[in-house]
Image (cartoon, rainbow over all chains, first blue to last red):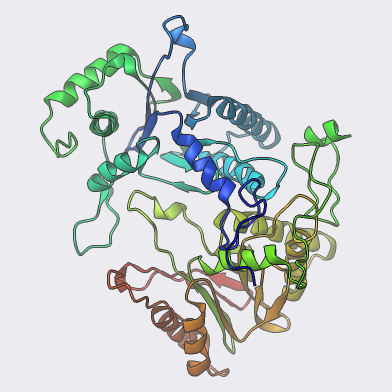
Length: 264
Length: 252
């Protein structure tokens, strides 16, 4: 009776280990952290914002070409954290999926369905041994328009093929610390089980994301060290925040003294 | 032809739902699930271990319906719980729940839905539960034999109500399936099954079944850990009675 000796290929391809684990998938999660960057996504009552660190590794790089934010459709975008070439391959596939959906069905792909397609593709790589899982975690944002209602959406997909909607989440090297920070602001009060929905405004959402990243990185952020994109009710397009806007928000955050600033 | 496959231009073989090629021309041509010297298929055993680490699910059959339930304990308060779907409808009279690897479950219920629709397209009738079970089980078996893939890391509990009456089926990663009067899968299945064996009576109505079902949950799911708060456990209890199943609200 084999007693947990993984002497076979279970560490090299996605087959089960004796305990029922998929080591290749677990290693893919570790690969996400090798990029050294952290990303945060927050869903407010009106907008959704995704924010990530920005490191231009070499002064000779054209800084405008360095980005981890990608628009999948004009109104749905995502931030990718992890191995950049894997990210680009995945983005290409998602753009094809979204365009095919629009062509076949005549309306824009809902954010949850795009997230599901991304996750289903990731699941295939966890089951077929000839393809490795991708070393990326993606945070997808968009606003679903249902008649009069505009519903902001934020989803996170990972190499295991797991996807779920979030009020706020993070990915990357410091995701544990970032999630701890965010949980404190969304945790239901002691003794209650009702989910908290603070209905954050645009400024609050952006500043919460900035505060979170600032807190986990342990240093004040500068507009050049980060990139952020939002989707809003009155501007559904996935829009990058300019350096000036980021400066304004950072200044406003520095002057705040309440829960969002999180100086704990 | 592989390029055409990749572009999605070739029709997929509708008879074998499992053989849908995705990108990658070089799929392994040999099976990864092979016999050990003692005659065991160890990948399937390991898959069962993966199921045993998953959240508990259970099902109970009654005279006029079936109840299935699962533990829905989210790892963080940041998750939007309305986006988490653990119990899923396959047709208006069949619902399904799982224990094990969530992404694998998504693949299976999608195939299940398509199988049900394909049947309806031919016969203009809702698919009998046993036939749907056979299709899904056959898919799961293929992934224990086909080249280059691993078995599914889920066990499924299928609840439905058709012309035969209410039925509850369990399908394992090997592809074997059985009809049950009551069953449990996942982490606390042993405790839950013991509880169900003692408390069940076949003649019960669904209303009175869901109480033991929920209790079977609380009892069967009682872990030694003192930190577990019974209030934080939520259960979905869909039941297939008449041709329609419904999702019951979480208990207070």
